Amino acid sequence: MSDTSVNNPAVAVDGLHLSFGGPEPVLSDVSLHVAEGEFVSLVGPSGCGKTTLLNLCAGLVPHTGKGTIRVVGEAPSEGNAKVAYMLARDSLLPWRTALENAAFGLEVRGVSASERLARAKAMLAEVGLAAYENNLPKALSHGMRQRTALARTFAMDASLLLMDEPFGALDAQTKLQLEDLLLRLCDQHRQTVLFVTHDLAEAVALSDRVVVMSSRPGQIVADVPIDLPRPRSIRELQKDPHFHELYTQLWTHLESGWVRHEG
Image (cartoon, rainbow, N blue to C red; front, side):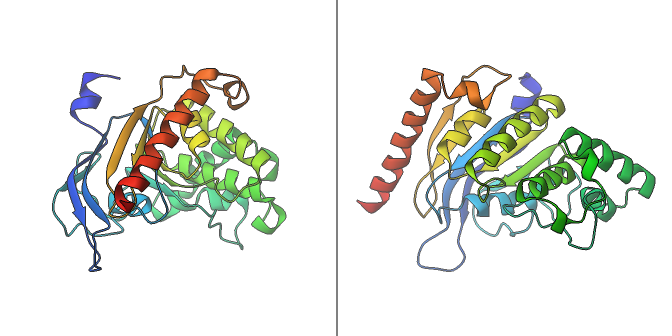
């Protein structure tokens, strides 16, 4: 990681407070810097503000509270071409083929038909769906639909990827396969990723750092470096004692966030 990426982070959140007008804020004094090329996961109890933080970065929620937030060097704005957002559900358009769905984000951004289809075709091949590019979503399995969504996200070639539990609804085996695929794509494309998950094992397997948030109002209670070497294999990590040590460390921090707010 270069000094430039540290001094000019892809995401810079400082002293952020956010309230939707309820009895307590959603986020309280949140500070988080994500360097260019880093993969950072956010974990924490439901309702602690993880997805809200992604939505702030994407410009989908206006920043009206205290503190500052900068994303790829500028204030967050909806439709920023430097940012791509992958949701928990695949959100494929049912009347479009896999290829057309993978190209949709580029179409919205005004990329020419020839270029967007070429980029989408290449990404479908990378995710193992070259033979299915003409299939409609109804002819794809759940895992294949998420692969298509991954292809759509990476085809946009955004410098920052926001990912909100993209594998949370998959069965255990498919989830592990998609995690391995994401590891490979990140190694190849070197984009910055801010990733929300409830799965601590997933967070450890994928991340360079895992940030633990407390119950609402969401605050950062730990920022844990994941010093596992890359490239990584999901299967091989299960045999690594340090992987399990990191998992236990995160669980302890997560519990402390619950206790601190319940006490």
